[in-house]
Length: 399
Ligand code: GLY
Image 1 (cartoon, rainbow, N blue to C red):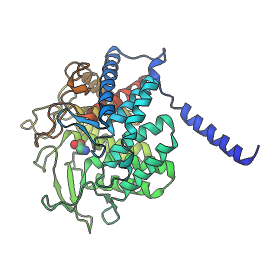
Image 2: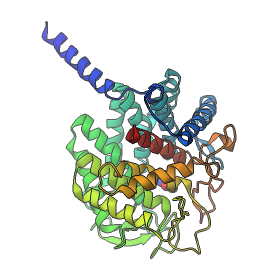
Image 3: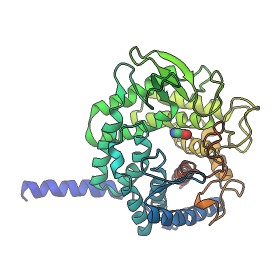
Image 4: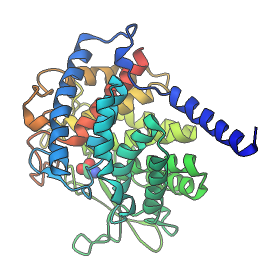
């Protein structure tokens, strides 16, 4: 065999092996067991996603929330619906879902170059990242690597951090970093695995290490924003943009979930026990918090009963997905039990939309930004995305 042919064959075999390890379509396997609440949840998900997909195809925009409706691919939330479609494809194995996911993902292609803020990680990992895991489409791998370079361009060697948002005189911010940024490190780690570019890995680890050291309080809660001195990298102040505006105690529920998910993911990607320990400390703080309601669906901020007026299903779904993953690395059985309880409760009529209602979002009672009175009607594409992801993780662990 000529050496070129041999090389091509080896590549084909390698790709086939990767692909076969991750074949979608669990739902069709008769020996798989799923509880009734799970079956019901997935039937609602499929119905809502099908209708929402029709809206996407008509508008070339992506769903964000009931209040803001469909948004352009530049919006930070644009990757969540394509990602949800990839998860539905993964579960059902049906070609029609793959095609929907491919079409929605393609809308985001130009975002690989958008260095305006850190959200390129959310956008491109949820869409192209999930697409890559399921299809091994080499074009997706190239876009992931390019997107990671775009995110890396916001890294500063002086601070050791990625700058989440731009400096802002009105807020007196020089180098703002938000806890949500932990989520975007997954794109860097994926691109590092694909390209071998160790700079991307260095950036991810440096950002995670400094966040762990500087953003967390002694009790393992954190504020939404930390502003750093852009020259020295010292912390200038804790601040808020979401959650409670009392920054000495503010414990924004979605922010705590972003951190829990981010450090769990960093343990998965590095095997470094310090990330596992940190994720466990956050999880312990959250699941034993006196202000966490018995059903596990948190209020929008944990920091006091005075501000705790509305539940946030987006924080709940991110937390559930993270806890289910964390339970696979940790001896603590409470993580799985709490993740399961949250997913079960989210799948009840109280939180799960009725098919055809709720503007085709899946979960009700999700909170965008309570104090800014923004997106309070309760349909958010990221609440839906992490809910579906959490269900899939639950399914894989129980089958
Ligand atoms: N990443 C923005 C938010 O969680 O509201």
